[in-house]
Length: 189
Image (cartoon, rainbow, N blue to C red):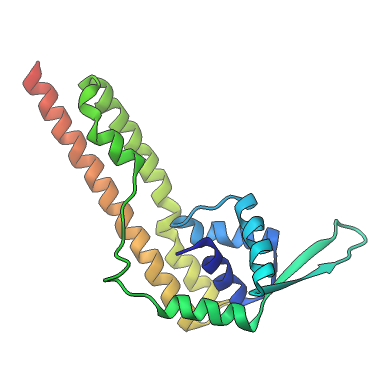
């Protein structure tokens, strides 16, 4: 996925300001794709130059002026082309993890230090997983309140399910790693 296509997908729901896009991106897509506000604004400018979106400056008396972005027909066509080109054989999920690279080379550190790092890692993973586990309920609430249609909610839930399962697997991996490291530490004593 490219950042551009994620932004087009959000604008496909409704016109938004850059601030609203950044917030919605972080609350939804941000669980599996990170982007800084500066990247989002840079992409919005580039997409407007490409004709994929338009913007309208809204003058406000009591607040700073704002710019509202809307997807164009060519932007929607680009988004749908990208979306329908999903081919898992050509684009399999890839794992890129600085954490796993560090684990790979962890034998260069003292075992007690590494074990301490894994205990800290477990705390972090559990904290990060909490909001992901609550997403399904939030989607149900939004659907019940009419904020999201049932079809959109179904696919949001599928994406959230991946996050839930991934974090459960991460916690299981950390727990198993701690167990293995503790057993190794006992062997060495």
